[in-house]
Image (cartoon, rainbow, N blue to C red; front, top):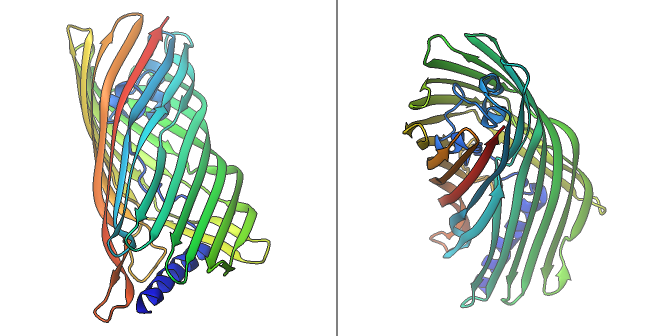
Length: 424
């Protein structure tokens, strides 16, 4: 009888938490999980001061002033695995374990020279994507769960940059950011009484963001870069949520809500970098990126039966680091390596708050090798990200009551990337 009470208690607690705060955008507290572009992807993204080519559109559009020829970047793909693990996530002893294969087309773009000191570009980036699909069965106690999530961002838009004089370059990028999110969770516990719960969330947003960039060249080989990313401003937004909670086939609070107000408020970011570049020999860079704090309601509305649906998101300020270098063998074969951080902006996990989100500080390494010529550049490389942090799980206290506890959460991502650019 007591085990039945435990089950009812945990499922009811989970259900109530999901009604008040659906986990929309739960995975976006880490701002850079892998690098985009060709040169930046190999150098850990440390190119704010030395960015050129299509990479410059995303990292510092002022670098477009250094482009020597029209460029078409036609492929830059990531192939890899994403793993996520949370101890005691469903019930004591029932861990969440997920691993997924991911294929991401990350960069496409064209650059057109505007005279000798300026260039315009149009580029497409997918700087973040999360895919999880998992089925867990604990047959000894008749517990079954299904979980899936797809979260993807698409950035596309024009850029322009040029040299004001030999020491100063300026640039501007304007991106439309299209984000889609879907999450499904189903829990069935076939005890007596039999309990089942499911939630389905689907949302999309279209935002606008600008990147202002400056590159300074105080000496022949030294460079300084500064960028300012505006907050993302909403243009279009929509979401829908469906919940179902059943006890012995009796409805205990199911509802459906659509036309919900959805926000995807990414905060302002400022980056500063310093680097050195000796043409056809070597280059290196070190960048610091400060993401400001933010707080907003990510999803809000009412169901057709009057149930309130609302989630409040809080993000603290984060300072991330990128560093990397390249060495060019015989002026033809660039070898690159880099390191970067992706610290979580989520508040500390709070055991008294059932809606508290996971917090994982992550670290990444990149490396690549390539072949370049006056016509074509090709690179192959690896991006590895890992981290350990905290999340909320379940435990039993000394009296045998079910309680929440802080548990260990782990994530790792491994990507193999290819890219090719043509110059004409």
